[in-house]
Length: 279
Ligand code: CAA
Image (cartoon, rainbow, N blue to C red):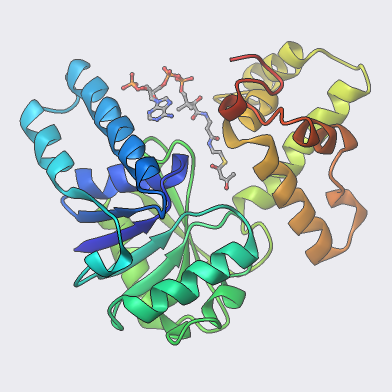
């Protein structure tokens, strides 16, 4: 199968790696080609580390790498079966990209968005193939996390849902089917939990470290909520809280002022080298 990945941030990179490792050809695209080249180098580095741990053979690494092609124009992506959009989490930006790609990519291709909480229906209706638009929500880090939420919109056909399920299983992930709703399943629970951890810290009830230890050791999470916020990106967490709040219109989804303040101060977590922790 041929996959066109639009976006070379953490998710675009991780998703490309997963598809290439599972024998699919990937066209990797970012309008700023230098960013796609950096992403490709990072993928190589990640594969290299698997080789050095004895988890991947050098031969398999080379085969996987050869399946990923950085392209300079969307027109170079020919005979595509699946498009995965992983650009920034902004509805207008995503709509613009969907419209652009819809004009160029093969009419039979399914369009998937990796949005973490936005409406799939709103994206579907800007294309000429609303029945072929679906949400495929991967989790960070994509090569490690097993789950993919498959989100159907008001317009997604049952054929598209079956295709998404089949391909998710084929790349070794576990699919769950979700009807479109703000935050889907995971983020509707996970991000308010992070928001609550920020409240606990802000009220002076416990330190950052102790909040994280408490959740790791008391609830058996692999990571504490504040370390997880840094991994996800505080801007993404705020974005999701704001979407939940505006869509549901209930107070329990109000973003904590400290979360908003940190985003304004560009303390976004790992990507800016500072969030609740310093990196
Ligand atoms: N990319 C690729 N591999 C990674 C990685 C990354 N970013 N981070 C860690 N790994 C690998 C490591 O190389 C290591 O591999 P080996 O076992 O082969 O050595 C393995 O993962 C475990 O890593 P570590 O030993 O360094 O650390 P860890 O055991 O603490 O695991 C973790 C790190 C996998 C990130 C783990 O802490 C974890 O699962 N955390 C929770 C992550 C999570 O909840 N993600 C979902 C976020 S929500 C989301 O993504 C949705 C959204 O829309 C916002």
